[in-house]
Image (cartoon, rainbow, N blue to C red; front, side):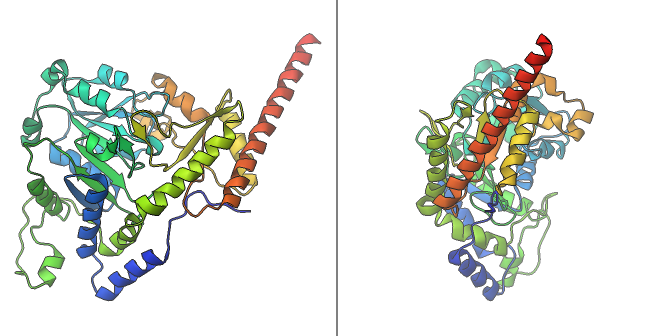
Length: 419
């Protein structure tokens, strides 16, 4: 049997939506993008949503919107994909990495220790689809002591009057926090619609705004739509409908707009998300936990607790009492069964670029501890019961084989010592 890690969900609804776009004669930014933005707002209860061509583009755009620049600092977890840091670097600012909690999300106490007068934003990462502890983070950045450290250097910073809270929600569309959409728990929430995500547009992302009441979300949306199209005040779709052909460039913008041909894929998926796609992911995650919890070595991911429920994007299984090398051998054995597995993520201080720029893994012990024993299992709507049975069997056999190998090694060492 051959089981992929995370293929895109393409059904007849997706094909029909894409074909409708192709037949319309309009494939770049237009009505499908606007329809997808409306669906994202409906799903997340956000006040505004701006679709762009990637999560990274959306993050760069929002940091620039807030005025983040050289000399500023943005706090992020060390345990994340590199884009969480690269978007900060592309603004000329410094990523300040902190360690994570055992549930793989950023540790609020570590955030508190890292805040300085240069801190302009925090990007909290919803790893595997699990929302961060947003109430603790918000309580921290709204406290009088932390607010007193904040120095505004842009109009938006003066209006907010504190550190900006951004959710890196690349994994977590559809997750909940305190009984509500997790997207409304931060000032800005940015989703990824990359090919492997719960909802995909092949490549793409969406920035959702849930700012305080003194911000005009409609005006911010208009600005961001212009900014994401080279700062041009009139898009091609508007001109194609008989609008005045003359345009102007109002801002030093970016060219990061999402095209309709991509939005069509996501539009078909998001309409089925709460009814079909998300429940299927949840069912698989619960099955994994139900069976694997019978084994002492299994550490289940946090899928749901008193305040949070995951979007079940990734199933980050961890295994007790193994080394990184042993984890790698277990993965090799699972792959030999024809099951593709992954790791989420290699902590950024372990990557060459970040090591060269001064980040040291020794400062993030829990990030390494969790990474070293983590294996991400396939979890997507088209997996059958037969598929998941096979995956579970492959995992159990591979882990137990490694455990047996470890015991043999221990006995060999003991015999060698006694002799």
